[in-house]
Length: 448
Image (cartoon, rainbow, N blue to C red; front, top):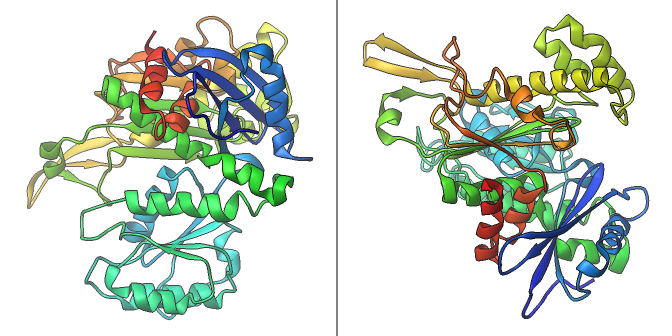
């Protein structure tokens, strides 16, 4: 399967998902989508079988020499445990970094100095992100956390992104483990710098996670590893960044079967930041994953979180049978109601609230999320929206986007709303490094 093309006229982007493998064929010159194909992900045999099936389905539209770019969330995606020195600051910063890296955070552990860390606390992650302390600050806690991590029996990969002055001691405690050292995520109080840790987690994902899940046996597993550019959520977030470069502030809400993800790229206002009080400094690029909000596996917990008794029975049916497909208008109404609850709750958790308080330091804005009120574009995504009835996006986002809201919710007030009906954002993220012009043109197709 070719992975390089000296003078390409088309490129193939493939998302190997946990349920479906989706292929998008892109024209290099125009960024237009030439053709699409889907096939159930062949996790039970070899994931490349599903990729081959998509290539076959594209037929004559696909040039056999076309380069293939792949992202993957198969096999459960990327599971990250964050170990930090205290939950409200460093561990919370690590959690944000992990989410922006395309991972699902399965545990956040505050490992205080001298306290034992049990392997059970980590909830079977693929990667551990170890954080703690500002640069030049107290090194004792992150060193003790590294020692506790090693003593717990963990033998998997570790990304270290804490106090730079403690790196040598931390590495000594983790001797024998696969370790990548990144820049401190909290180099000083009130500052969050996720890029170094995000890149390191991506490196660990490609070198240890994709190759270690036995997703493909071809060429000793290397055939699949050589194609994969990153975890699907990380790649999608990169695509959102490209789109934001064209239109300004962007938020994407992706309603899936098991989770509802929200990605946002929002320019931070320095003056507003000076008046704000945040537990951890905000970042322009943010992703949240709501594991209790979804259309199938998490439908029952979506109904519970929404507090809507009418959703309980249809949600229970979908949780019991994740392959359920609506075939009546009543079923489709229920699907839309579940999607509306999932999208609305996920957007509220991502955006949070703001309120003005007056204290000894004067007027201060307290907020708990990412302010989305001035967002220019909202992109809706997910199978329930792509395959829904006419007007489904407006109905699902009703009550969360473009309406007057009480309670201080920082939700989009006057955005343009579009549907990513052809899985464009994953393809944009895959192409952004090697074919940036094509990636931008492809992102522009979302704007009509």
